[in-house]
Image (cartoon, rainbow, N blue to C red):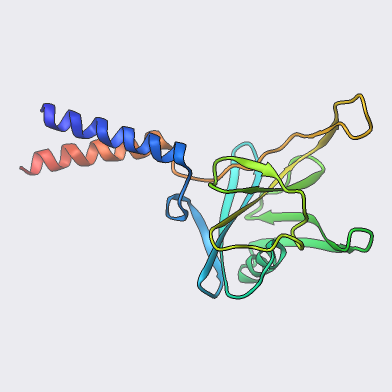
Length: 186
């Protein structure tokens, strides 16, 4: 019995440390993969505090995050994106995203990037200027911009990007159940 308890603790520790080290694409609940090619990127769309979806994008050559959104939009009628060109910034503005009836909370979308799918930072370039690299994580979060003063540039965004992954406790329980099944078979 001590051996199984030790194995269960090892499973829990490995799941915890994996979350701290970041996610691999294989750990994410991916809705679907769009495009073709040998490079991979993960595009996460966070609609609200409980509704977040991840989409994989495959490509070769030089592509942007906007190209990824176009491919994801073209792949399925369930995903829609509306955008328009803004001359003053020389890029595409994402007006709205929706998937399976989920829509944005608040008045706008904000663009985030991550190295590991855990720690997200606001992007300082738009989606049409962000050239993707193999293994890239890009995210969109809906929310509102609120003024936090005192200067004209003191604004904060109310949304944040979150990667949809299986809940760690559920994975741990699955591991423990499999240990007990293995024990019963012996």
